[in-house]
Amino acid sequence: MRFLVDMPVSPDVAAWLIKNGHDAIHVAHIGLHKAEDKEILEVAKKEKRIIITADLDFPQMFALGRLENPGLILFRGGNYSEAEMLGLIKRVLDRLSENEIKNSIIVVDKTRIRRTPLPID
Image 1 (cartoon, rainbow, N blue to C red):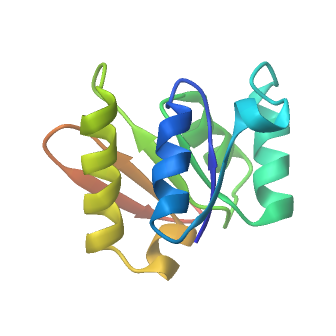
Image 2: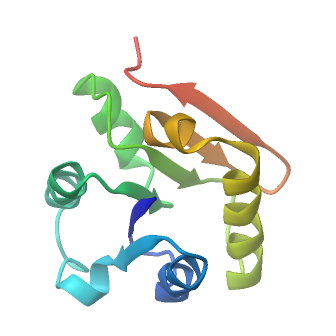
Image 3: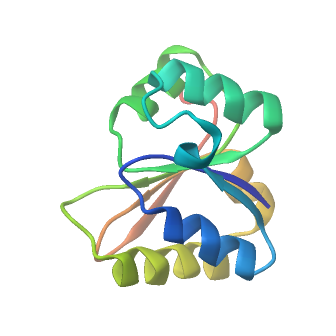
């Protein structure tokens, strides 16, 4: 799968994804660490990359734009250590198919994973 990892998620998450066979980049590595969310979303759409973020503005952008893709993995519910984020990303990848992730908003917190198919009605 192809991922675009957004701030404040660590660049090490992108490195872990690469190590595990995925095509991943972090916004800091492509000069987008200070970009507006809409620019990050456009890059993700153009490059067909699933966004991984903790930024709560993205679900609203997906809903208002009635977007069908790219997928979104959203961390909610507080601060996460890098180890916690990696463990949760692994759970998402183990539990959901590539197609489910590509066409959904996946909300992850410390106790559960919720999937909302796109577009949001």
